[in-house]
Image (tube, rainbow, N blue to C red; front, side, top):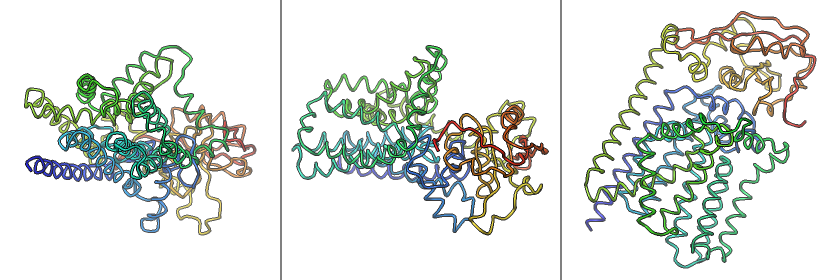
Amino acid sequence: MIRHTSDTATIHTATALLAVGTLVRLALAALLDPGVDEAYAMAVATQWQLSWFDHPPMAFWWVKAMHDLAAPFFGDPVPALVLRLPFVLAFTATSAVMFDLTRRLWGARAGLWTLVALTLAPFFMVSAGSWMVPDGPLALFLALTARLLAEILFFAPVPEAERERRLWLAAGLTLGLAALSKYHAALFALGAVTFVLITPHRRRLAAPGPWLAVLIASIVASPVLIWNAENGWVSLLFQSSRGVGPNGINWSGLARAILGQMGYLGPWTVVATVAAAVSLLRTDRTLSGPSAFLVALALPSIVVFTAVPLWGGHALPHWQMPGWLFLLPILGRAIADIEKRRDEALRLARGSAVAATAVLALAIVAATLVRVFPPSPSTVTFLGIGSFLQESVTWRGLAAGLVDRGLLAAPLPADPKQPRPLVVAFRWIEAARIAEALGAHATVAVFGSDPRGFAFLADPAAWIGRDVLLIGQPKTFARRLETVRPHFSSIDIQSPIGVKVGDIDLFEVEVAIGRNLISPYPLPYPRR
């Protein structure tokens, strides 16, 4: 009875923490401008597709569906907060699943500490927890798959009973949904298969359940394969090419990969989680238990993407985060064990949680101050944050500036079939910001060697004979303009337009009009 009372209180605390975390992420979703990747998702998720150039379709489907549902009520563009709602709520569900997974394995206190670590990790709080990026859907469906597999492997003593078959089918479904979210699902599957094969759990492979799960996962993930087959496997080729480089070991990239993971999770969390994993594997003295299971799920993503710089590639720190998601329950268990002893390590754990909360709170306050009290141009120059702000804030003032000059129609065309104005950027990052600013006022494309998903939205060959607005940042505009000049009868340079933060001009974008497109710009893909 005492254990039951304690668990009930812990579950109530966890529920309160889930609610607080959700409210904080909602506040962040309302406060922060869409990041570049979010602006890109908003720009390319204007059509229903089986998949996209950069990633499988799940995150883009969510953005498109939310836009279509909300546009009649909010108009176009739909506020970023509304588009972010599915991602915020999805991470609340992810947090609840991770709490339940840890609680099922090691008790409610371990689950609570896992939830604390997950909530205070900057990457999971902000990016995976509220942004329109694939990491949120991926974390949810991987967490559900891990929860189902844990139930099968550790709490289903009779292989292939009816309940176990249902669990296998559900795991196949959630793994397929994870594969529709991000290619990282393949590494999760690799870890799970390896764990089953090298432990006594392989006896379960004699039953049809696991094989049906693989079949279901493959069917659910098939839109990604169909789209890639139709487009020369361009997405898979693009993603695989990012992990290699021509110049040997990239030591600075390796340092950034390691330090970046510490920044995304918090240094104490990384060090404590690694120590906890090593300690618990030694204590358990088995490779077939829950700790080894979670380590097997985690290691492929962490090891592979941390090692990418060793063969010359450039690794982004968030690539390893799906792996760390499954090490946090081990940290939760370790802290819960320490809690029983009430030694110095417990005070360190609590102090670290308080410090992480304070740092996160300060970051939120700083973001709020920047939004409410925008920095002056002199402050931006002094702090050297001009380039950062150019890519991290919405390009406010661009649409109004174009309308004021008669370069863009103020109202949307009355006939939705009427061609919209054409706007061209020279970098996909700039195109994302331009498309975010202009919304449904214009069709945005990229004339360059790296157009990403913009190449699949429209065929430039259909633009022959039309005038095109050319927009870009000053540092690259003049040079890129010369590369597209042969495709127009003439190019008329216009006055720059200021992009504002509050009432302050943050920077200016260059504008030109390409008269009479005479030949389509040769894009590297798709095959048409």
